[in-house]
Length: 219
Ligand SMILES: O=C(O)c1ccccc1N[C@@H]1O[C@H](COP(=O)(O)O)[C@@H](O)[C@H]1O
Image 1 (cartoon, rainbow, N blue to C red):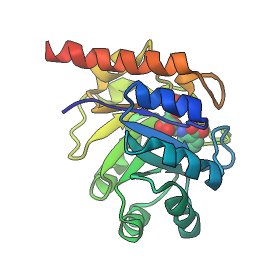
Image 2 (image 1 turned 180 degrees about the vertical axis):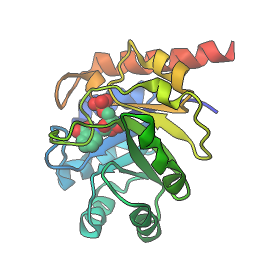
Image 3 (image 1 turned 90 degrees about the vertical axis):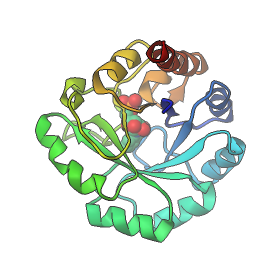
Image 4 (image 1 turned 120 degrees about the vertical axis):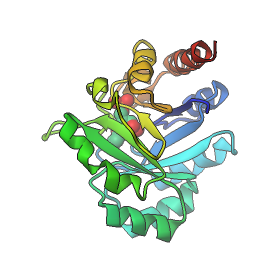
C-alpha cells in the first residue's frame, strides 16, 4: 500500500495549495483555540472548499463536544475526524456513529506503557496516529515539534493502519518510517518557519523526502 502523507495545521490558501500540488494525501485543519494553527469555522469552510477532493480533509479536534463537531462538519465537511485529546473508547464509538466519518485516534507515546491503550482504541478507530506525549504543562497535546522514541513501535502488531507524527521533518522522516514501519506520516511544526506559519519550500521538501522512502522500498 502506498505511503500516506499528511500535512497538518494548514491555515492559508497559498500553503494549502502547495501541499495539494506537492501531492499530500491528507490535509489537516486544526480546530482547537489554544493552538497557533486554530481556524475559525469560516476559514475552515473556505479552505475546505479549496481542496476539491484532491486530498482527504482531516479535522483535528481535542476533546470536542457534539455541538463543536456539528459546526465543523457543517463548515469543513471533513473526510476524517482526528481525535487528539483524551477521548475514551466509548466516546470514539459515539462520534463514529453520530458523525458517520472514519476516526483517527491520536495516541500519545513516551514509554511502552502508553501502548497498553491500543487494543481498546484499535477495536473502534479506523486509524491510529502515534504522537509524542506532550509535557504536563503544555498548552496543547500535540503540534509541539517533539519526537518520541520510534523504537517503541518497532515490533508493533496492530490490526488497523497507523501513522507516525511528532517532531518529523524532511531530514528525519525516512528514519522514522524505517524504524516504525508506519503506513503514513503526519507533520506540522517541521514544515513551519515559526509556530503556525507554514513554509511552502519546507512542505515540498517534506513530501519529497517521504516519497523518496517509497521509491527505495519498491526497488
Ligand atoms: O498542531 C497543533 O497545534 C495541534 C494542537 C493540538 C493537538 C495536536 C496538534 N497537532 C498535531 O500534533 C502532531 C505532531 O505535530 P508536530 O509535527 O510535532 O508539530 C501532528 O499530528 C499534528 O497534527
